[in-house]
Amino acid sequence: MASAQATGTTAEHALVQDRTEPDGPGPGRARDWAEIQERMLVPLYEAVHDRLEVGPATSVLGLGCRSGLALLLAAGRGAEVAGLEAQPELRQLARERRLRVGAEGRPGGRTTAEQDDVPRTAYSLVTVFEQLPGACDPARVVAEAARLTLAGGHVVLAAWGPPERCESAAVLDVARRRAGRTTARDPFALSAPGGLEDLLLGTGLRPAGSGRVSCPFAYADLDSAVRGLLSTGLYDSAVEFSGRSLVAKELEEILHPYRRPGGAVRMANVFRYVIAERMR
Image (cartoon, rainbow, N blue to C red; front, side, top):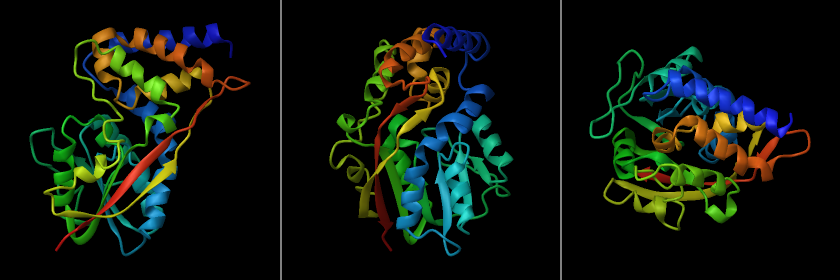
């Protein structure tokens, strides 16, 4: 696909979203996450599942599970799985995968979940794979994860690795630059040494291991790359301030160095995770 053609397609797609989704995420963006972006984190999910030997003896809760791919992979290992997700469009997609996913509480409130959807009150493993980089209050998210973990169970927290190890860092900077004076959280705020570990203080959790995982972001073409990135939620403040079409155009421009022959887009990235044990 030629550059001009790709740019036109993406800009038109973003313009339609400007007109039809002014109040936040809609079904189209949720599907972009499920069909394009979510698979980029499969190496992270699998590394954690391998390390903790997730299987039939494990009960897993995905906190902020989005459309539930990590849970689906855990269920494939025999684990009992459930999730909590605030966005109804993502929650519906997870349920279409036959996952039990309840509604997660908004910031400032406690988790609420329909009893039929989330059968347990505590789990042997609670994962927070996607939520922390864009969270307004990461400490609250971790405290909630601890509350939902059985004594002796584990919580897994994940975030971007060092920005110098992530080719997507320059692309993510569009979110900050196009957000104007609105609040746009730095996705690398927890990437510094000790960033994730500091969130464990006062939660009843103690560090029990950590690791880094290569998670390249690979897309079929420029249009898919832009749609996938916009589906992460990290660009919400930028879109609100500058509009989707302008943010999409700038993403296209900054993604060009990562295009491969044939039009595919690939960026090497590293994610970091911390395992914490719930003390008795």
